[in-house]
Length: 110
Image (cartoon, rainbow, N blue to C red; front, top):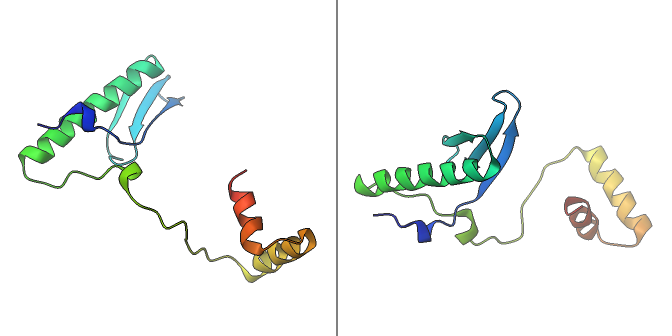
């Protein structure tokens, strides 16, 4: 049986104006959610739903999603942008006397 101590999934709780309640979400299980009156109850609810879901997957012999935090990331990704944006960013980097990579990294981490 899937143990809660193995639960290292990426959870978040947001407010839902539509439902006037807190909504618990799990990035690795985008089809699952839990509505509750408090953020704490929403987190507890979505964790319980994910645990039940992983128990079902495990019992059926299906793959259980790997937690995002367990995955290894290279730190590299490719993004296509319009040539004008590329030029403008290159100019900003040159004016700041830094590499384009450093400029974009700074903008992404703001």
